[in-house]
Image 1 (cartoon, rainbow, N blue to C red):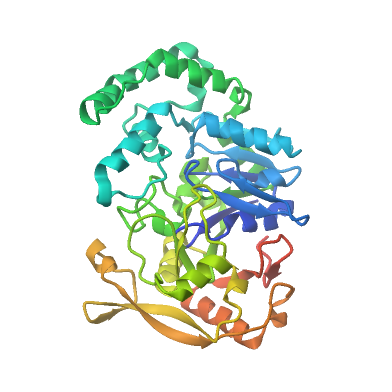
Image 2 (image 1 turned 60 degrees about the vertical axis):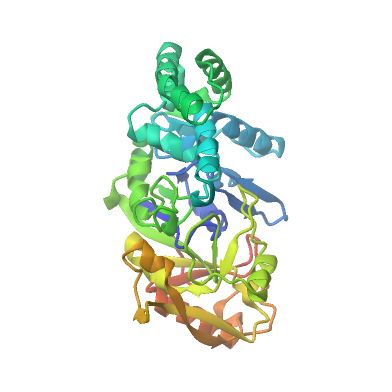
Length: 428
């Protein structure tokens, strides 16, 4: 029995899809446990084919794996159908995909409110993707949300939409001067979409627990990253759910005592999309170098990622918050051809050295990186198969990150392909 959590250890976009794909042949189940279509995973197959996934778990690309969109996810029906159609058009078998009956549906009014709210906030905006994720989670917590199972009873579904729009339309019309949404139109639109996925709705919690009891391996796949967690991230510039490892149990219905491994994904440098503090962010030619060489554009949003050097302070924080047992270090190849490679080992806040995440939002905004420098390497490492194949200075860099982060770096990505991974220690 093995339940493995896969979690981004920075601000997301670390390469979680590559890690899932690497483990795929050893998995029987892959579960997406939180978030919505505000995040994406890119997977590059051995034949060079590239897939961008937004709602559907990365295990969909591995034949024989059962895939679950868990109860902690918010599901946009239109996006789901588009993604399914795109995969099927490329001959990907999607018959093994299930949707938890308890997953909440993202409705048209969630998108409308998200967009007008961000515009209203102006330069104080959070930097959301505008896809309605936050408003959908707000309804979930307020107990006025619509769940996947509701589309199986059209009367209940219509009642819930009508009740929700009584307030939503007041907000749209009287606060934001926008047109009201017609309840019947929303109901018809979503129920029509539901015809394409309602056969996938299932009571997934017992299925997953029974799979574990049979000795099967379940991967719990998070989206975004640790520093975007609504509780443990750089609040308020965070997502609306809990991508940290604790959220995996809640968002899947698997007990925390069944989680045996927490695999954190670290990029060999740091990136961030959206607003919020970023101590190691670079505004010079090195920031441009990392962005260009690393292809740093958001899979879902298309937004350019902000880039900076590796931040060991947030890596240590992620190790502790998630209980990380192993790390997968991605994009080490991007750092080839540097004379020296900086590592942020601490911050300076108001003239004092700080080795841990500052407690206050103000402290983190004012944090300045304290760097140490490692010798770089010029060799092309993209074809390296073992740790010993790496240049000595690249090995030293990895070992230093391991020491600073507080968990073993078990896998190293040296390129985007499935076969461009060095395995130092098997995860499964």
